[in-house]
Length: 77
Image 1 (cartoon, rainbow, N blue to C red):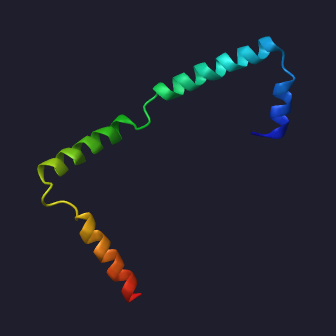
Image 2 (image 1 turned 135 degrees about the vertical axis):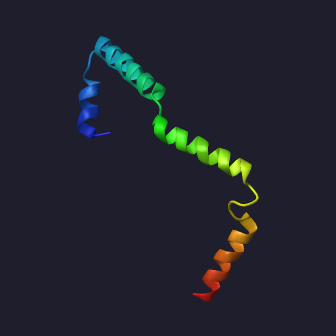
Image 3 (image 1 turned 30 degrees about the horizontal axis):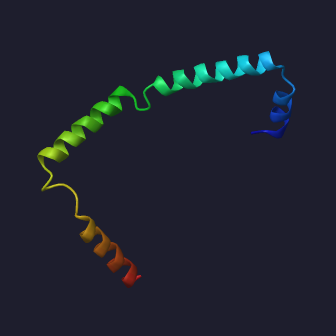
């Protein structure tokens, strides 16, 4: 937090501090209730997850294989 802002906040009255605190809580609550991911992206993610679950044997690589590939690439570099 900016030091000047902090100093100004310290000079507020108790009522002003409480009012500001309540306003901040309301603001944080409204931001927290807003979806973090737009519905279009949620839909895409659901679609990809469904595809992955239906085709899990065809998609991706095992962690052990990925690790081996990375270590192999670094050993050749």
